[in-house]
Length: 258
Image (tube, rainbow, N blue to C red; front, side):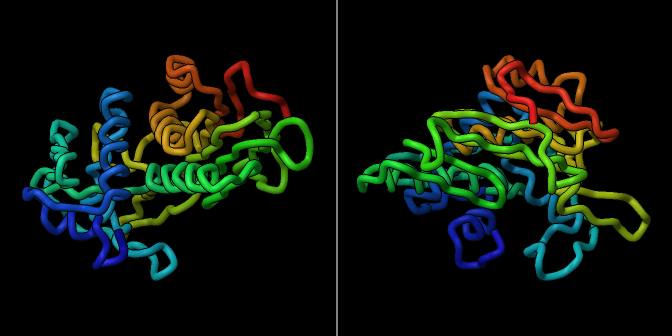
C-alpha cells in the first residue's frame, strides 16, 4: 500500500469504480472477502482510511505516525464486488483496502505452493516473525515453533509441534504511537469502531493450516479480548495462545508448554 504504482494503491485511488488487477492481487482480495465472511465481519479489510487517519499513512521506518482528521467511520456494511471473469474488483467509495497481515500470510502460502510445485520437500517460510512450514523437518520428526513472550522476547511462553501449516502472531505492543492529545494508538483496528482495539490482550498466536487464516484468527481473537478469544479459536478448531496485559497466558488444549 506504500507503493503508488502497486495494484493496491491503484484500487484504492479508484474506490467506487471497477479496477482490473493482477491475478495475485485478485487472489488476495478474494481471500480477504472470504475471511470477512468466515468471521462474520470481525475481520474487515476495508479499514485503511481509518488507519491512515490515525497516523499510519507511511511505511513504519519512514517517520513517526501523526494523527489527522478523517470522515466518520462507515462501519462494516460495505461490500467488495468481485469480477473473476476479468480479474477485477470494486471497493465502495470512501473506503480503502488494507492488505495488512492477511497479505503477509497469503504471500507465505503462495511461496510454499510454488516451492512444492517445483519439487521442494522441506520448506520453511518466515515473514516478519510469522511462519509457514511444509514437508519433513530438517531437525527431527516434526516442526517445533516457539511462541515468544511479548514482554520478554528472549524466552518462550509455549510452542507448537506441527507436521505442516502456519503460525502467526498479532500484537498491540508493536507499531504503537501517541497522538498530539496523548491518545495511544496501535495498528489493529476494531471493525465496530474504526479505532485501535480496546482489548485486554497484548498478543495472540495461532496455528492453523494456512498463513492467511492464521493471521486473520490471531487478529480477530486479539480484538475479541480474553473473555472471548479462546472460545473464538475453539469455534474455528484452531490452536492458539493469548497473553493478557498483565502477563497471564491462556491457551487451547493443543498447545505445548514452554
